Length: 487
Image (cartoon, rainbow, N blue to C red; front, side, top):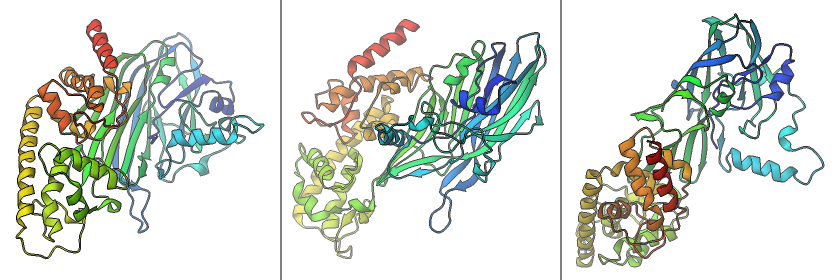
């Protein structure tokens, strides 16, 4: 999907031509070795921090994607009694920070494959007649790539390289190249610095920013990576997880990092990489301009009884919003609280943005008809129950998971290890996942707290299927058993 290119070091024997180095091993985004089994990686340190600048622009020239400064430090050890001469390469997409309004990289790859499948020629990713040629002019203006060996900057040149389907290296792939020498048993500190930007995928009210860090290429070193730490600072321009009247945000990731505020840290010892890392910020705008609500239509469609108020509201909002926005329970209650006022031309007293409704104006007196006062009493009863549920869920330690469960509709088993660095959180997260399949099918949940949690998502109602793609309860159970057996 959206990518932040992180370094890859390609090692091969000195006698090979640069073009061969570029083509033979253009994949991965972390230090890797291809031909010399005597060099190991003692440690790897990667920091990804905001540089303070912005990339891309609106019509008025303002940047809108945060620029990031990348610093990578590798401790490489020659375990042999012989000198080692190597060529090192660092592939990346020269076209970074792109925004896609219709498709992500995986969609683009599928489209390219379909477009060429009936043609009498090699697959699209193998068509790269210019690989090995100079690529200096293809570099982003603010890339500022530098390489330091034991603290001294070394000359770097740039070559075009082949596209790589496995690593989705498809946007003008380029590789930075330099030479390295190891004395017998020498430890060399290699440092790379450069700038890049967050990529972005957005359609309608939804947007996503994502970073991928490729670890599996590091499995080619002699033995495991002794110590690896990758640190990401999420820039202030990207929102924290939240459920509000106007915004729903959750953070998603793989690899079990420690998260402290905006600092995300993956740390491993004796690492034999088997999976890659990703981090994303997923956003839905609740007040999207294409989806304001007809106050009169909604008032007439909602069933104003305690048993049917929320389910009828959820059905109405799902059917009338162009983008089928996701409304959690508290937001639905706030809309219901504001609805009689908007219908009568009053500014809602609960501070909900009145522009969420289509009305003639908001300039009338505050008195409401008795009928509308009566429905507000029903809403107040439902709100009181929701507040009790929030307190119950918060006390049980489940509330922080609500943004994810309120928004996500397509689940996969990769998320099972999400909280592997937090044993207590992981148990609670798996508690919820174990009931996801039942909740999505509208089955009654016996556990009072977990039933209260799903009731706050805005999509769980007993006897109603939510149309969610869940993880099976069996998969969660098997994963828990695997954890218990590994202790």
